[in-house]
Length: 485
Image (cartoon, rainbow, N blue to C red):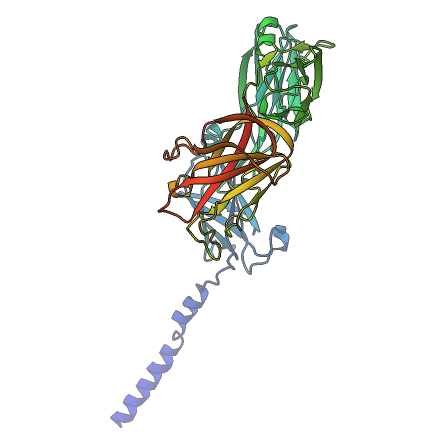
């Protein structure tokens, strides 16, 4: 009986406790968190004291089109800073990054209860004002007359920046503030200035800096002040330069002048003046676009002058000549254009051109196998090794000069015998067994002019007479020149 009573009591206790059996489960269910969707990516772009960070693979789309589950807002955290944006963004723009250092950004989404997603992270270094301060830009070339000046540039864009435009300002002699702008062509002029007096030009360049080979997002303004003193009338004329002569060679018609390019747009032309063999004064005008000019009738030992004419900036109908420059070509190489050459034996494979020693290209060379040596299937035995040059017509000369291929002494020609001919078959002795000076000096790649008897021939034969008999199998020559002095 007692056992039945005890069983009934236990059953009642059990039912009494069932009402609260799931209380802990209900509490747990009420506090359950469902996290909002996270962003796809965090890819940054650098701007001036700011960065832009893309967050979706779909690109930049309106916030109204972004659906990341329960996400309602965007949170950006960096350097103990937090930015909260009341929308889900496809990209963010973070400003006020004034320090040139690494910023580490974490970007979350959050729901209406501020439950954060898993973050996307990116580290970026912004471009700052301190970077702009040390950014360099090419200085202009200034072409000045007493009354005006022109500022020219070769190329303002560089590995550091992309140039877009510039503005400039200065005060003229009437105290007027003059301002101007230029786009892709940055050249500009300043005018109405006082000769011999200073002028200050303020230039503002609009550029996009480049960081790690990538242009930043923003343009910046680089400001530079250039002060110059305008030349006086006298100093301007004295400083004018005549057009440069790159080389002079003698042709059967006259002296050939190879010109340096004209890089001053105020130069108009150049005059060549001389007295010819008939005692008649000659004057030849050379235009700026001529790269070379044969001055017919101008010969060896005839002095001549060059005078370049200029139109100064800032005035009309004024032309000024530079101070004439005198030349007296007492030593001059013959012009080798069109000359041909043949060799006594086949050339080695590293010497494909028969005129490599006449082409003016210092990287090419004529190679000949030495007597008693062999190279591949080429073996001249003990036969003389030589080359013959055809100058196309008879010319007067009394020196020759050679340029060695390199510093290897075993490859150099040490001595030559020189012969001349007008039919290419019957050769006359000019001079035998000529030692090449300084042949053992590795610092001397080119010999001095080596005098020989004054001769007039169309064909020249150069026979190798001396060389290093131990080292190397070939003798090599980069250039062979003839001339008159």
